[in-house]
Length: 154
Image (cartoon, rainbow, N blue to C red; front, side, top):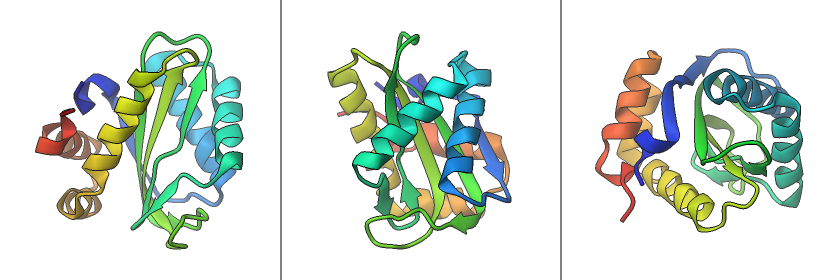
């Protein structure tokens, strides 16, 4: 599994004015609907439900919201770079500016966990995050995410 298997170029965006976590989840679901044909309302509900179990802000300005939903066949992702960091309630209390959301089939067990580990490993690399924060074009962000050595599963 590689990040290029989880992420389409059209699911990588930059946004300038994110005011709340709820708005973020709405935008993530909208992008997922456009890129992958995912139903928006259930996707938002699933993201919020997962978030209620504990924050998916993993620290250092990174959030990894994820949800299992009906109606999709494989794990897929949406990446957002926020121009203005958002108070997300992360474990380190730092605001978030890099968001990689994963949507998995409800019955996906190991595939969902492998995808989450892959994204987490990639975004734990400080050099990747620095490059992502320095770029303002979605195609460059996609290239950074999908060509980094950690973008491939072990």
